[in-house]
Length: 162
Image 1 (cartoon, rainbow, N blue to C red):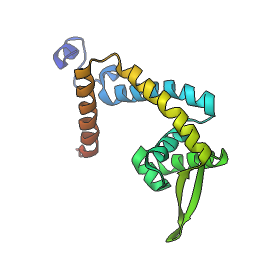
Image 2: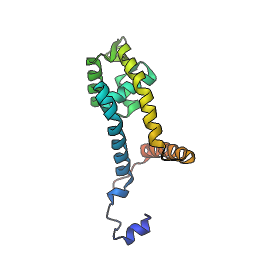
Image 3: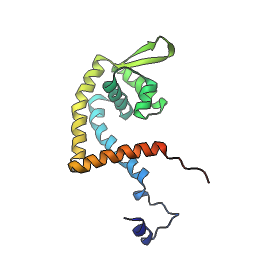
Image 4: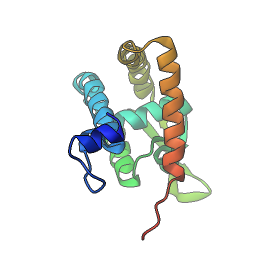
């Protein structure tokens, strides 16, 4: 629906049509996808979405600090801290003190955590392929490029108070 069609349908400049509002639609998509994928790893390994994100980040990058994990995964430090504690309790990661900053620890997957990661990766990749299967090859390329541009723009956009 174009802006003109939106206006003709009875909306005006002061009305927000939530179902057409990009931030809302992206949130719905992200939540739907995350919940769908989490049914597998939650049932199989007893971990939630934040734990999965920490596990996946450490699996991809190896040793990192919690601050680095949070920056990479766009998670708040409290959520990262809780996820790290849960993974540590399950024996899926190891902490090593940073000798130059005792307040900070280096995190890495334990041997068991690495096994869980390697078990999850094929499923996660199959899940991603299944999601993207509704798009043609050109659409997938355009979609990936659009996501990259929207993420960059979201970081850059600031609206000034009037």
